[in-house]
Image (cartoon, rainbow, N blue to C red; front, top):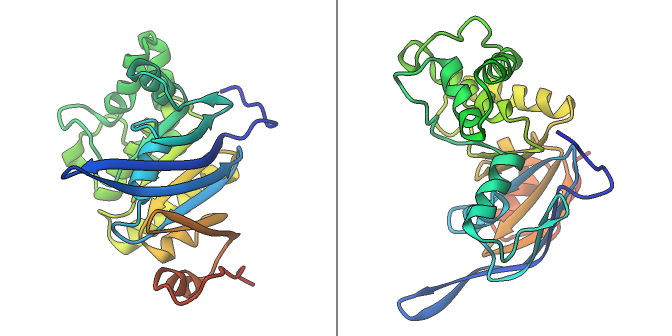
Length: 253
């Protein structure tokens, strides 16, 4: 993974997204501007219907904005065709989902190799990368286990290892603890913080205020609009912002 620290990983300027619904135009993102630098750990937090999933899809090159500019490591995403979007996703983004999306007949190691097969890597290199990724998430002793032999937390770790195996500049995590109990969810968040301390850029999408507070930076999205950006905001401040009772996000002491 080659990184140019002088170029932001994500640079969004006045991103607007609209859909035609029942012959009426509905705008779900309103002139969103956002910059994410290499090494950031950013949480995008908002309630259901806030526009956070739409924003995630655009960040992940799964959808295109209706207006505005989105540059991913300096490359303009807006206006690209499907083949180019697929190429950018595969090279620059590792996805972590709420559901684990593991193939039950494959081992943890084989699941981690899947995205590398799509990249056309030879078997020896695939195996090496997948093993290293599983070691990073603490599953070095579970490589040959299948899905039904792993706990929920372990399955999510396999999902994270699968994302890491491609060595992406960014991990994009969509509600990564949503299917886990609170203790296991905290363990997964601890691991994500460790990855970030080691230099991995992470963008986390969540509705959960406590989870958002684990990131270095937090932005609030409400009705398709991003509010103030601060570092390590408090749970109380996030709650007030989401309830619409406070305009400014105050930095946590």
